[in-house]
Amino acid sequence: MRPYSYVRADDVEGAIATLSGAPDAAFLAGGTNLVDLMKLGVETPEVLVDVRRLTSERVEDLEDGGLRIGAAVPNSVLAADRKVRTGYPVLSQALLAGASGQLRNVATTGGNLLQRTRCVYFYDTTTPCNKREPGSGCSAIEGHNKNHAILGGSEHCVATHPSDMAVAMAALDAFVNVRGPEGGRRIPIEDLHRLPGDGPQHDTVLEHGELITSVDLPPPGFLSNSKYRKVRERASYAFALVSVAAALDVQDGVVRDVRIALGGVAHKPWRATKAEEALRGEPAGEENFRAAADIELESAEPLQDNAFKVPLARNVITRTLLELSEGR
Amino acid sequence: MDAEVTLKVDGTEHTFVVDTRTTLLDALRERLGKTSPKKGCDHGQCGACTVLLDGRRANSCLTLAVAYDGSEIVTAEGLAVPGELHPMQRAFVEHDGYQCGYCTPGQIVSAIGMLQEAEAGWPSHVTEDLNVEEITLDDDEIRERMSGNLCRCAAYANIVPAIREVSGR
Picture (cartoon, rainbow over the protein chains, first blue to last red):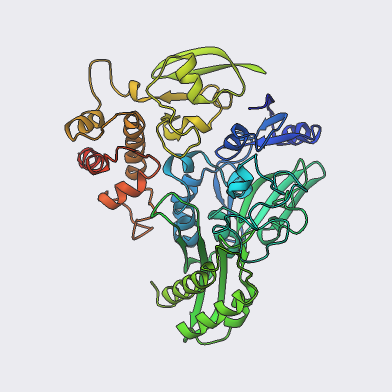
């Protein structure tokens, strides 16, 4: 591992100032992804600014009836939170579908959002990768790409975002609270992660020195009728081939509101807005659910090894909505 | 860069200087002679390095020692007083829950941390009702909750009954 200076700031402002002053610095929270990437030489920060004890470790009520999740809340604690379980089951389920018990105890809410792709070429420093080394090329486009994107990829990168939690948060219309050298801002989670375009080295819109301090969930409402379904190659402890986070509000057999987000298919949690639009005001039912999924997946551009993700995504969307409509 | 850290390991406090790149696993094994946490994959995938870190199970290979200055760590070695066995250790012996034994300390520490999580009512991926008050640890629950610990000898068929026996007490 490349040598680095380890800094523990006294507060959030100090951490941001330290990081901003060092172009090659990184924040460290739980470290379950960053430490691994540093061991492999994929990440090579000169300065590590430890923020694990600086942001909140609590889940708090918001005045509007929503919840504020401190950036340092461990994934395991968030999944087990009673208010999350009842108001936002999709979020608990997504967290519990990810990683292992040991990792969830250490991985934080902020860190989970900022974890890097598990594309094998990103991890393999002997191969070209535009995300790791901009301009070097993409090894996945013509390589082993079974696990890669079918939506929103570019000629520069077809990596997928690995988080389950973020997919659930996308379906919940969460907001990410950020502090930076210029002050604070509140980013709709839909806008936090980027598509690769010609800058796949940037996973998110965060500027250097910006720190996630918390995530806000809106009041539960119909989001309590939500679920997460993940398809993977093992029954446990594996990243998604395809996952779906969905919430559904059906009244008198008609879809009043619906939220759908997909994991494992794009460079970011993929909010299926076209499918949602197609369903609002329409009768709830398998046929309509499948038709809506097809509309969303029309723009899919599968690679050599991952065409299976298109019907898989369609089937998982359909099944998940059907179960929600039947109160299952 | 070097930094001084103080760790309480298996009940004894140690203050020493480490390179800031040192993982908790390497600090335990190479600096403190605590070799029950094993280095398997060194990437958080196998669970052989599992310790209780401030009361919760964690992969010591993915944590930096310097980041846990002041923390309390329990390894398999510190689960019971010397000469005696923790009930989970005894159950692994009685059920033959190992072959080569390399993953065993991590399995046992993980199982103990896992039982505390279940006791606290934490659900898992296979828990039918997320809002259940009390977790019933059947074999599916044990397997899911222990999926972060791999056993290349595949002693799972005996590990699960060993854990089930202790969970039933």
